[in-house]
Amino acid sequence: MPAISELEKTATQIRRDIVRMVHAVSSGHPGGSLGCADFLTALYFEVMNHTPQPFNMDGTNEDVFFLSNGHISPVFYSVLARSGYFPVEELKTFRKLNSRLQGHPTTHEGLPGVRIASGSLGQGMSNAIGAALTKKLNGDKGIIFSLHGDGEIQEGQIWEAAMYAAHNKVDNYIATIDYNHKQIDGDISDVLDLGDIDAKWQAFGWDVMHMNGNDMQNVVNTLNEAKTHLGKGKPVMIIMKTEMGQGVDYMMHTHKWHGSAPNDEQLASALNQLEETLGDY
Image (cartoon, rainbow, N blue to C red):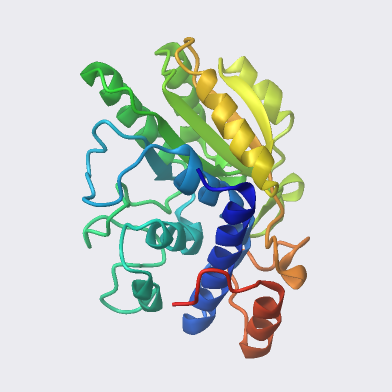
């Protein structure tokens, strides 16, 4: 079991990977990736029961994660590589021609750790529910996890899936919303306000929890507590508060870095703020 300080060091290295990846090809989505680095680090290095090698596409007898907001692929790829799914050196190929690491995760390249193509927002929850029901039918005790953007919750398919999961008592499933209040066009409240998001999920029949997604101890504690809520007839939704661009001062408190890459000077500034802890690729 890694200490919290070790998980924090891993998350810092993953943030370095993120800014280097998007800078190298002058494209990608660093803002949300940086904000979710602590969550995905905790999930893959501490909370989930999973086997990177050999990769089992069906996820039989292990926990399975689905990234629904696929545009934050930089953090997903870094976490997968750093936890052993494929060589860290492959991060150099991000968004390049014929790479397995495209801008949004896809399945036809056969990248270990990726089970669904994602990026078309609103679809990941439906996939996750299907996987959770499959585990129930097969007597598989593994847990399904998924991550969603708060802007994604504006999609109607999310709420259809939410009703379905509650009605069918999909209680081996923990979903998380990255509630940073920002999307590509601005603040959530300006684009399409979500209203009382807690009350909505509770009214749809979910067990609702809260988490500070940029406090590693709180992330680990909350995810582990969420597992104790399973098996009680309700799916679990964690409302996770994060800061877009967390760890890089000029990327924080704005939506401008949702899908923009840093230039050379900005990259240097970011790397000065993020200590190299595991070795750069």
